[in-house]
Each structure stands twice: as C-alpha cells, then as structure tokens.
Length: 237
Image (cartoon, rainbow, N blue to C red; front, side, top):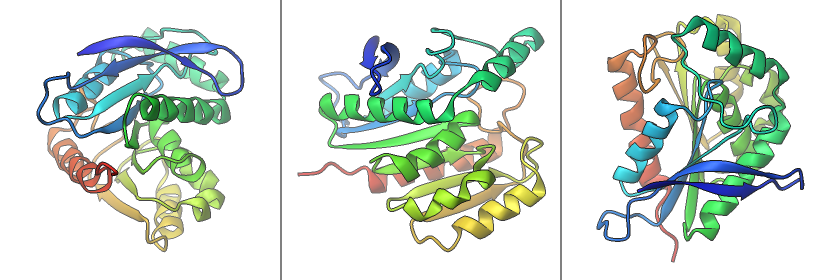
C-alpha cells in the first residue's frame, strides 16, 4: 500500500509531502520498524518510490520525503535524460543540506508517530551524505549511506555517531576522489558504530534502475543493507 502524506517542517517553514509505503494491515511480515528513504538529486522519482515499495514488501513502513520542496515541490527527474540531469544539478547547487537533515528528522518523527518503534534511514548519492548526517544529527536507530559525496568535508561530525552506520563506498566513484575516499575510511574506521564496505564500481552503482546500475555490487550492497536493518531495527517492547 502506498500514499502521499503531509509532513510538517520542524522550523515552521511549512509542510511538504512524503511517499509512504506500508506493508498493509494484514501483512504477517510487518516489523513495526520504519525506514526513511532519502532521495538522490533526482527527487522522489519512480526509482526512489520503488525502493520504498521494496522495503514495504519486506515488512517495513517506508517514507520517502520530498527534500526539494523548499526549491520546487514534486521534482521527478531521470538521470539518463541529459536535460533532466542538468536540472537536477542546478537544484543541487541551491540545496540547503542543513534544512534537509531537519526535514529528515521530521520524517523520522512522522514514522514514530505512525507506530514505528524503531526507525532507520537509507540514502543514495545526495541521500548518502544526508544519511551520514542523519547518523550524526538525528535520533535514527540505524543509518545506511550509499556513495555519499561530500562526507570527507564533514568528518568533524563523526564523533557524534552513537548508533549503527553502514557505509557503501564506490571504489571508482568519479564524484568522490580517491583522497576523499581514503579520508572517509581513515576518519570513520575507528568508530565502533561504523561499518564500511568498498565496491569495485562507480557512483550510483546501486541505483534502482538506469545505466549507472551495476547489478552484482548492487545486489551485494543491498543484501548487506537488508541484514543490517534486520539486526538493528528490531521492535522495542
């Protein structure tokens, strides 16, 4: 089951929508856990909605908030269409990361209000950075970051990570330099809450569909994510 819901920004700036996918009232596999699915720079498009649907099929309540709402609500773009990719990067240049993390926190609160006893976050690309920042700034119970760009510039926040964080790093990421990847590994490995995996793949290798997807590393990373959430998003009494 899926629907659009309204979320209230914590800073009083207004309301925004989120795509909510649920297991259904009769789903025997329902976990009472929620997952915030954090978009790429292409908005809450068909691929992100499909990711949310896949988590719902596994028994989670999944919510994909529209994080571009402060710029342009309802953005849905295709990375393989040059004009749409150009539009996505233009939006990214105007994007406020701090506001987005606060909006993710609003989504976490919404899932808790929806009855989820534990809530995790998973993000891709831009969402990978935001998932990392969710681990440092929100009360997410577990966070998963796929090939986030810009994390190396925010390693000063790593000391705030007190709950499990899984990092999927693209070893041939053309958006993240080798030096940046090395800094991320060196900066986060000492934290006992962080698990890092590096894949012989380029950026966006685990995108739900499209030309950037690399099926084998994507399947490996997604299996690790599934096991991670199964372990760390167990219902609370």
